[in-house]
Length: 371
Ligand SMILES: *Cc1c(COP(=O)(O)O)cnc(C)c1O
Image 1 (cartoon, helix red, strand yellow):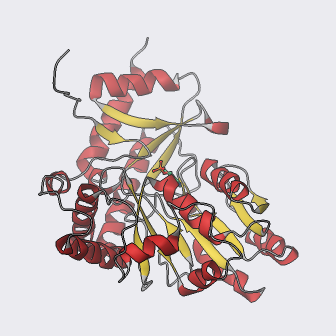
Image 2 (tube, helix red, strand yellow):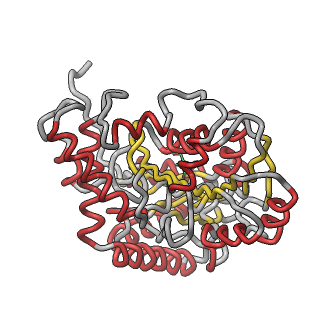
């Protein structure tokens, strides 16, 4: 057995991870610092400021959780849900289902508002379900990665006409690629991940909490059952106390810091426009090949593009040809879309014209090659 590991250079066009800029990997080669080093504290402060800009929020409590996007989801739900309370969960895909599952595990009585996978929500149904319930927490996945659907988190604030609500948005596949407007959209709690739109390796989950969300957390009947993901304890480390909570994955945070710097150097608006433009080029190419997109144009994500597998074409065979002959990874469908769609991530560094053209050519050849 060789002593070193030489993985191939893949082009990662699945639902994440996505390729990272060399600068981001370079950042991880900087000298390791301890988690109580004053120089590392400066790095933490910078990350918090950078994250506020990218989340478009002034929220004081904005930091990274040590874990992937799923740890961000657990953090938001475990802290905001009191045992036995009703929570409205909007579900139109796999990650909406996961939120319903986690909310139930953290003690909620879940009131689901369902739409078919890949179909938009009827916001009147969401409002009616909220009105009829005693729920104070409402959740929605912004970018439903399982279907390629963009859900309207900007419409959640209308629920406040009914009564006060804590609005939770999953921005795992939108942050850094689509506008999320946490403050503009009155979102109280949101979580994301490092490896999709942000353009860093997997391992961190950015989270942000409004004052309204923190007030609900402070007024809990009992502390959350999770100690590791307790927002108030984590904030004693990220906030001014700097009280040890866990050993920070410092190198991961260096990488995230660099990726966030790259985002702001490009500018948020320019970055969103780039993602929109390259997704548009991809869709035009797909349609020119006679293939079809799954999601209607007005709801399409730019970061995650879903293509219907044409009749008579073997989904898995095409994906393995892309991987083995072209070093390109794309995602498969799952749940009701198993074998029915391909999921193509065009995120961060991979949202560019050359990559799109390369993929279109490879996909055309992989579909045309008979077994
Ligand atoms: C990827 C993803 C997650 C889970 O993130 P992990 O980093 O895989 O834990 C959660 N929600 C959405 C919408 C996702 O796309």
